[in-house]
Image 1 (cartoon, protein in one colour):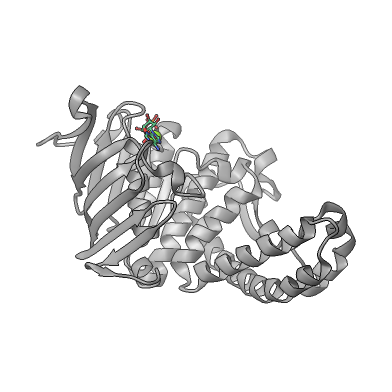
Image 2 (cartoon, rainbow, N blue to C red):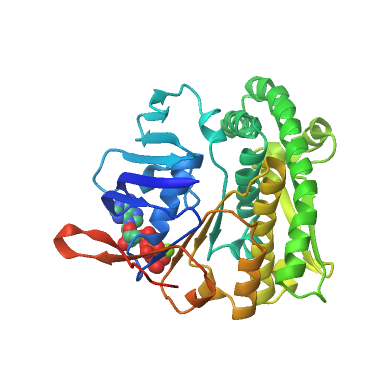
Length: 359
Ligand SMILES: Nc1ncnc2c1ncn2[C@@H]1O[C@H](COP(=O)(O)OP(=O)(O)OP(=O)(O)O)[C@@H](O)[C@H]1O
Ligand SMILES: [Mg+2]
């Protein structure tokens, strides 16, 4: 459970602190007041990455050198400092040389109003989703992914040189294949476990008469080495590695047709939510407890039926932190802490607890 969060030089916040309810915390406020940034800070604290950007540099407050996120999760004190030059991690005030133990403390799912991009967007969106889940599910996932990215970047850099440095390219081929095959195996096993959970969630949230299908689509063939060799000509022409896990995708189908083309907007939203609920249920069944659920302004996009079904189908007992611009739907929420975020001129952004709200 996340009890406290303190941030410094994070997005629009020079300094900010808040405490959370063990069950439901709701943060209400108008646009651009920093609601998404607060949820983003929870992700950066616990997973050391942002759900919004690939690098953490844009998250540092403009004009500052580095950001700090600090919080208490399950009575563990987590601290992370990041600047483009230096990063520092501490768990219970003990500096951590690597992130392994630190990343075991908390697992979470981030529901965003941009989740529909999982269906409509490019494969990169879906790979990011898989990687975010994978790095919480398998202890080694993150380091395997990083090794793959490093080998791929080096190999591509040599492919781009004129003339291409074939010896150096070849030197990176073996490590690329080895680590690429490990990554493929992990992703394949992850999608196999996710599929029944996401399908069950879709059947509860979406339309029962449409059949949702989810499959892992490998960016290479079963034999990555052979696929790489077979693509040599195209690779030389395009000067980049054209097969491999960096081309992986998730095949999302509705009644056996591509969901990006065939599904209605509401159905696409239901699929995106089903993927996220599936993500939450998979973590819950593997680790025996619900992950932390962050819901960023997702309710406005859903009709009342879907909204209630989403709420009813989230793993029970999971701590929820919800942001919204409008209180209109809050009648459905039983208990919790309610905050209003405001811009208070010289004092900057402040939180006011709306006490005894009885919402
Ligand atoms: N690196 C940064 N430094 C300073 N301010 C930033 C930085 N990045 C973003 N901002 C600003 O932070 C503010 C809060 O953004 P955020 O996305 O958290 O708002 P929000 O409350 O979620 O708004 P909305 O309801 O529109 O989604 C915005 O005004 C944004 O321009
Ligand atoms: Mg927002």
